[in-house]
Length: 331
Image (cartoon, rainbow, N blue to C red; front, side, top):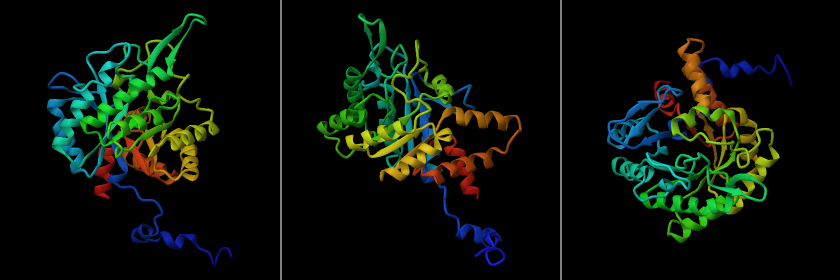
């Protein structure tokens, strides 16, 4: 049957009618808010390339944590910015390192707020790569040593869980990282701690502002030998399937906006929760355009986040989380 019997506009005639037939809903419970914690005291420093996002020292962080919880956001993702870096990223897995100390503080201030710990070495290594560097004298090639790096990533994950992290989120893209971390957590008595795997992490141009914020730009080369080629989709399925087999509890696609097709594919192929990371450049582009008066920031952000949810995201990591939570309350 067709027009005039079928009139699709009948279900759009009022706000109340549109509300009751709405297929996809966005709430503050969908969001994880990233936080950059740093050493020293008295630090609340806005990140130049990410307006509205700050470096926080621990003595000032409580106000931010309380605001996040009051908005109904139920999880934060912690990134550490250490004072000291070395070749093996030892500050990533120290008991008194910045992420571990921040985790303990947050669990004191807001015990019900979930702490998601990013598990990587790039912010902590002097060279900015996500693992231990190996130089092969025979070939002259310098690259990240996969298996040596796994041992340090396990130490990092266990130390984060010991500090009270509720979720471990490995972002390093080493082969076998989920299996190694799952085994390490289980052996340390943390069988209950889930892994939110950065399963499909592309070697993307959308990470620039984050690297400014985390001070994690590689000092040589790039990350294309371990992060994925943006042209590949079938490879994304292989990466995700490996993580499922190895024991991941959640699967992430990063970045989100240019990879919604990949997000949908994971949603259709696997029965684990799917996470979209609305990354730094996706945030900064909207902020820059809004500051010029070129677009309606609120409308653009909510439509974009809704699109990620509609594409299949169960969870959205976004720097817009606080703003979006306020706007949703207003609605």
